[in-house]
Image (cartoon, rainbow, N blue to C red; front, side):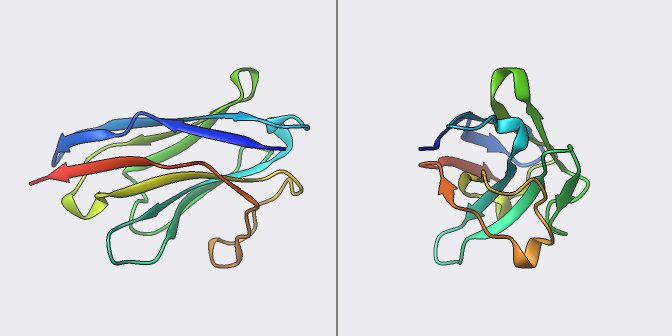
Length: 126
């Protein structure tokens, strides 16, 4: 069983910053998982924003590259997403996701995850 619990969402003005956290627990160490942040805006499909593999390698969607940073603290079993220079189009529900069966995440377009958190809302006003 894997449990993912997000926190840190909220409302912010354009140009502001937020940091999301995801507390993870499971039957294997989080350090061995592929982990990701997804988001889903109203009326749109869920999309992957960033991934981090068990070795700490990261990958970002073009829409967030240069503004968002994914990181993790294995000792705390916590995944983070630092979001800077936020735009109104970043408004969405943000989800933490994990694949505890793979160390590598692979390409964003082929990403498969098995577990999801409940989501945390991020709202950016202009």
